[in-house]
Length: 602
Image 1 (cartoon, rainbow, N blue to C red):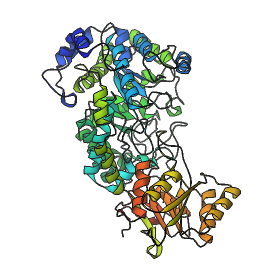
Image 2 (image 1 turned 90 degrees about the vertical axis):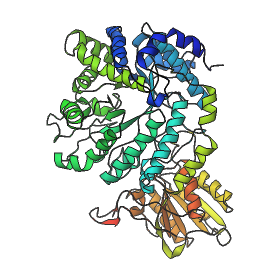
Image 3 (image 1 turned 120 degrees about the vertical axis):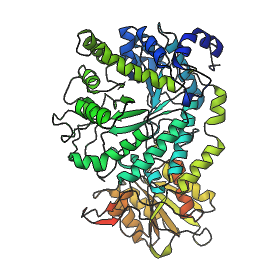
Image 4 (image 1 turned 135 degrees about the vertical axis):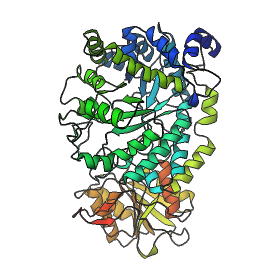
């Protein structure tokens, strides 16, 4: 079918010169040796247009590189001016492609592998045959582009609650091995931001926690895990996106840290990632006046990217921008200037510009006009080529159905994810020793609450997943979705359904002072039936709720975390998680209700 046409042998024969240029010896993709002189000779044969193309990592719609659905062809024509991924590579010589679920790139493992192979075939069909670096945002937890049947492991804050470097490394190694089997060789993870601001709307549980040293250790563990599996890890978002109240997708956040505070709070995880040999670092669309008084976003800041990241921290790997389609990087300059300024600041890879033709031609013009020297361009191209060579992509860029079958979603990987998840569930409240529940004394459960959309589109909904998990554990459990903003009728329905139940389990999601979820919990507590709340995302929910007998935090609502929470609530596993962030009083943030490291046990 789609496996390897043309055959591996014919492709490798056709690109023998490139293979020789990139690697020496019989090596694995994760440890491929690099012949720098041959890479430079390869660079010298590239046209200026090919060089410019190598800088770009672009989205493209469709499940296939050559035969996407008509709706995806139409979307590609509208946004990019090409019909398919293969045409994108042929026209713009892009160095990489980023996969998204919403772009229909990630339907199932064999389809993803076939798409990757089709993209690589297009890369090797160019005048200068070059493999592509295929990437995605597979942070796990609340950001996952590849879903079941691939293994979904706990996300960053959950791993922060677990506190185990070995588990963090194992989770990344599993995730990396599965991505590599799909042909995805650059992952935009782990997040290195320190979530010191509970009001942060964009990072939150994507961070390992609020303690810079703890975050640094877990970042290094995940870098080693991913890269030992042959996937380039990418720490983000430099110089640190943890203390912001603005989402850079929609605005330009400003970080008020002094240079000393930055060095103490934000820098350690990036320093740790660099020490661990991180392959790539992603920039942040944030303003940090203490680091660059011009108030340019960090993505466009030479003092931050060259002065601090390159010169002060000594990093010489690949620097990739966050998406250039985000509003944070588009507020000050036009779409034609942003990619040019990013390159002048010290960036290597330009990720997902809103209008590729504008961005690509702007960079080409800047080089032809002398605003960017070709020597500067070559620096970035060599970094990108070195990374491709390190990953073994010149030696063999293809994946096989056999590798997918023996790697993706295996029983061993799924069991490891379950075990790791159990160590992350955090018990924050347990009045009167309500937990663990006993299926003989408390057999009848009602599960209500929020049902946020699945991060990957393949899991949940949470109420049904929890109810099924309790049923599998021997309880009689009924699910009732009440949503994130339940109205009076839905709350009345939940109260009525609680009659005769032994315990009500309520899944909460980002509860605020004015949230109707507070009313739901209060009304259920008033029935006299014991209430257990499960914070499906932010552990801060507990500060907004009163009267419940017990609370656990899961840090994500993927099935692996919810099943682990059910096992903890049912006493099949011990609650071992510890808060990686402090939970402050809702009415007085200066007071800490639950400090870092807090967590109850049975």
